[in-house]
Image (cartoon, rainbow, N blue to C red; front, side, top):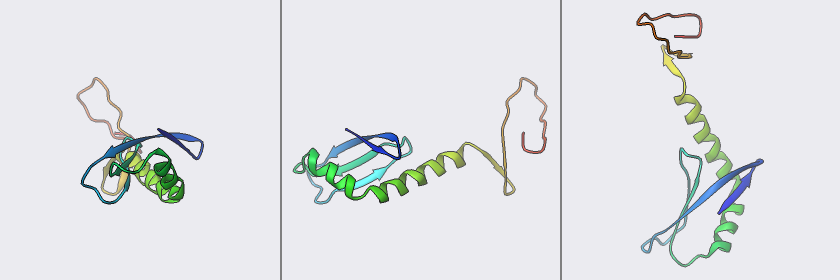
Length: 98
């Protein structure tokens, strides 16, 4: 299953658990939408639920994208630095690069 949000396609992973009474929506770091549900709802009900909560899903996707962008930078004393790897053992620090 896939859903298209803001011209991007996201995969939907449906996890059926027999002891769940409710249906839960999550977006994880791999930007897949996880739907945890009991066995009874079919694909039509799941797509209806996703379409009804599209605003909430876009907020969760934006939050996960912010986490990914934050983790790709090196933070030191409140400033962001770009890391560049070289073969030298010496450390070079420039304005925005370490």
